Length: 481
Image (tube, rainbow, N blue to C red; front, side):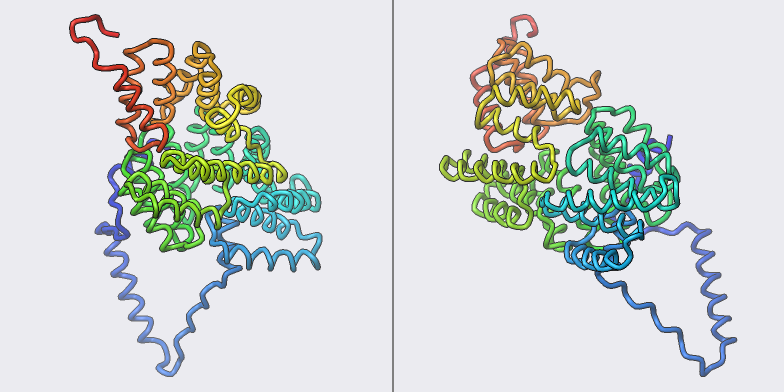
């Protein structure tokens, strides 16, 4: 299968930009050089050399990125959006321009966590579909934009609908596939994720290779193949064609290193991403997380503040608040939680489903009963692993340990498709088992969480260590428990 072939290739790749050319390819290049020299001798001596092509400007760079399904720098996106907005004012029947404008709004909203861009994106994308026949050429651009918009709003059922329509319309376009991968992941349909990746073009050759490798890396990560995911991401970064694209793959490599419990390596990747793209707020928040794990808390708080200024994500506000809590600064933590609520309200006004994040927040810092109600409804809408874990933890916090354990098992058992190695999920399961008096399983899962990532949470890590101390060592003379 294609995914397995890419998986095997990723294992053996080096992570440098250099590639050793095979003998046939070297010979071919040498032959081209000889032929080129011969042709130069045949040219009249006074013929001027052709002028080099001008480098693409910001709008052109963003257009290539948006239509090619790769990340774009924020200044380039701003230039491109301005260009498309001006164009559609005088070309209101140009469906392609409307689709490009809508997709650019989605990308900007995602990059800045400004959900106000999402209603703009929906208007532009629906206009694109309205001015073109349902089966006309180029309709796929509007469909893929609608699927990307639905994913950005965490509406995975709608993303699946639009994504499957896109795939039916344009099965040979690589950009038809990533939105479906995201939608199926959000819905917990991991068989469909693997099936879609195996069909996805762009894994073998062409300009889509870096982005396709990055998408494959996400699937590897969810299957627990962390080393293969890392190799694929570093290969993607080495093949990237723009700084913004390389920055995104470096950031994702940092996230993988963080999940492995390697904050020094994660920090290296996050800083590499920021050297390439200073506006990448996600990398700055990742830097804050890594710095906190390394005990550099003042720098960590500064990184979080800068990240929130660049990209006011409620997730970053939650992380910063919990860091303040771990430092014994509850007033500052509460201030961040107030910021989180305000940011969630703005996201909801833009059509974003924030119930998962609100459920997690309420379970630990608000009303666990409210968290349970929110997360039950969220599971009915989109039953992914993140929701199963959050619902199990909310039930535990609400005093419903027996029911909680079933959801924790769903989030961590391979039989349910939970192959990702998550320190947080495993910690939640261990704490639920401890409450139920399941000493042996609790000890195993808490120890495993700290092995996976000994820095997974500034609040959870000390709690896990205290729980293990209270559980004590297993009795060597007693039965296994």
